[in-house]
Image (cartoon, rainbow, N blue to C red; front, side, top):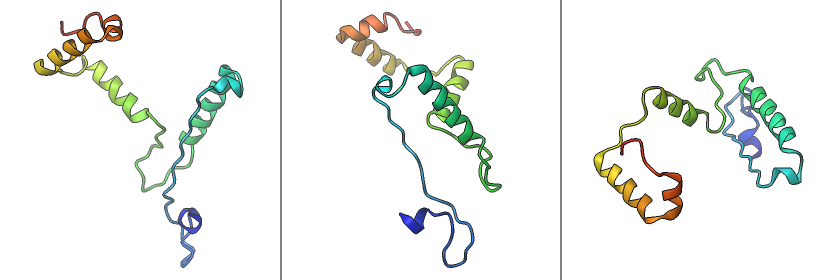
Length: 112
């Protein structure tokens, strides 16, 4: 804390990376503001973060929560999805058949 996240090496005055991240949690947004206002404000914040000046030594992109996973999901989906082994298929069917909520949501799987 303090000197560890100030972005300056106090001994040399040179810039140094900050081991700092952020976490946001919202349980009941509408107790604070309308959902539309929240989405607009959050979108603006994320856009501003992504447009921040990037380190020339960095990967060239500022990632926000869930972007890597979403990009991977979109890529897999574009390629026809993921292969699911026969054993895992059987486990998924068995799990679904034992739980009514799953039966409702997953009436059939693409591999059935």
